[in-house]
Length: 255
Image 1: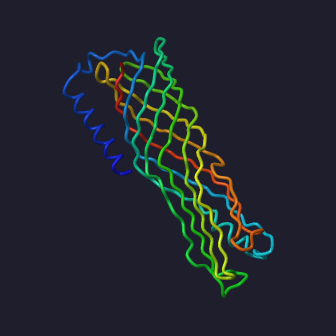
Image 2: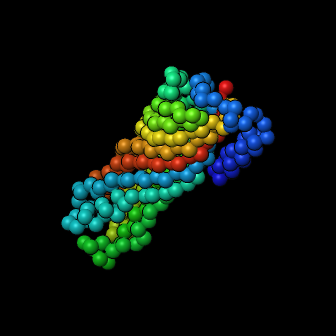
């Protein structure tokens, strides 16, 4: 994945170099934003994954067990990573107002893990338990409307629309009481939504540079259960939400 991000970075640098070597200068560019365009971007993404995990009390977990286990199993995960993206779009323009549709596909290597280590049960202090949670996602795709306003060679815009991603979620509980265990290892493709804003400036006849911020949210991306290995009536329920914030720098070629 790091190699893919490096490739995006090299392409980004090469495009900047080619622009600097040719085309017209900025004073000859116009404020015409109508038509198709394509681009490449690099950026930085921060994500929050919020598991809501609860024990099923059917006999194995008793008394203080839920109050001890639930907060540790539901601890949030926060991760950061670089990303690279390709984008395609089309814009319509009427006076200073620009309306368009844009699709983009991002690659990243977002992953994070929480592990409690061995913790003594309150209800059975001579025995311990351990909980490990891990999340990972490698891509996201957006289909967004854009609404912008042109001022000189600049475009200020807001954007929003549906977003897709696939989240890998794994959970492992073990203890020394029986001993017992419970595990989940699943992935889910989920439809969510994204919204953001940005600034784009033309500095060649067919070239522009853009900075944008995008927020994406995926509610209930994972909904599952994990029974205990031997006491199958007991176990855990899992509901996972996921959100990201991305800051991207783009080079755009209009046609």
